[in-house]
Picture 1 (cartoon, rainbow, N blue to C red):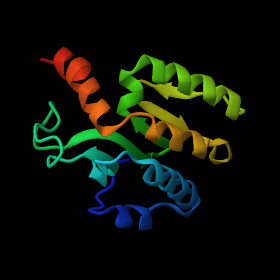
Picture 2 (cartoon, rainbow, N blue to C red):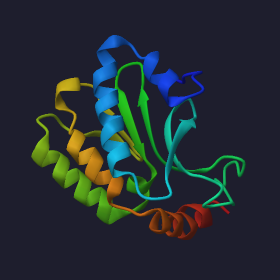
Picture 3 (cartoon, one colour):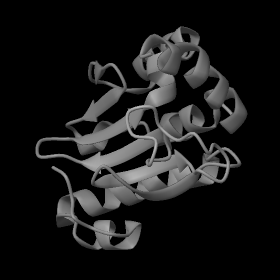
Picture 4 (cartoon, rainbow, N blue to C red):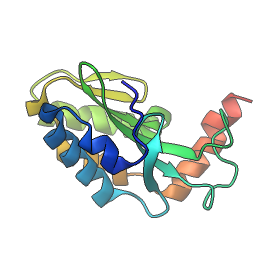
Length: 154
């Protein structure tokens, strides 16, 4: 569900009561582990973590007016989602994440490309999302983006 919130605080304030605590805890993990140069904003109707134009002036190839996405966090209709662009583009990181997820969670990983879905609020690996957030620096993500994603879409 896309939100019309114009700020992260407004987004949090509008969450259903049962989603507030898990989203706030995930947000805290992300903010505490966010690489230098990545900023929180509203992006695509979700909490967005982006590389701003001041750091990467070219912006996102799909729409250069948008900053380069790094990660998003959203309360969807039937689940909470973490969207990690880095996870989608770096196989070693995906392998690490899926292995660690299996060690820390009771339920099967529900994932598609960059989207990690959490349907059970009691089985969210908050610390693992924090670790994932800090695995790739801002400069490394720009390099991965330019050599894999951007190049393959030209």
